[in-house]
Length: 164
Image 1 (tube, rainbow, N blue to C red):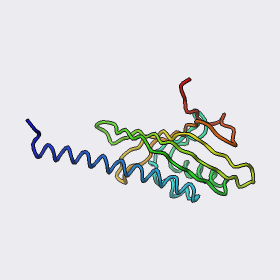
Image 2: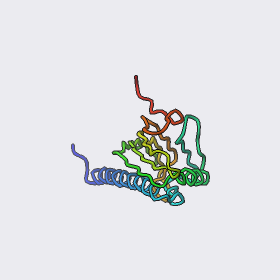
Image 3: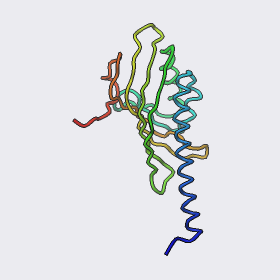
Image 4: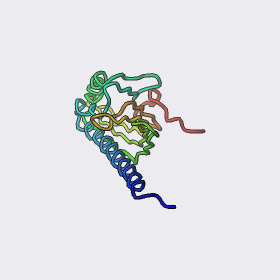
């Protein structure tokens, strides 16, 4: 026996909701990179929850909360005269029965140092946990995991964890 019209509408509504959620997360990922490249950390942190946890540099080194994050991003971005963050396609897995999603996104990030030092490239992934809030989807946890770097020592960065 086939599903009733009401059951099909409920199922279609869930599919549409997930598509909208995916697009909202992708839009926020793009805004994060655009605002980093424009050196606008006060706007960039709007994609994070107030109680976010972020690690860009090394295992166990976490930035806790949006206020601490904006200060950290101001310092970091001030060191560069230009950056370009380019994302690949995100893998988005919605956690059943919750307003959370686990997202892994490839990233290439180019940096031009303000002090005239050599440019460098980072290759890796943003491994994220997103949370649906009253303001929309926000980043709750972000860990940048490095596959490699050109022009920079990668020893102080979170390793990707590639299988041997």
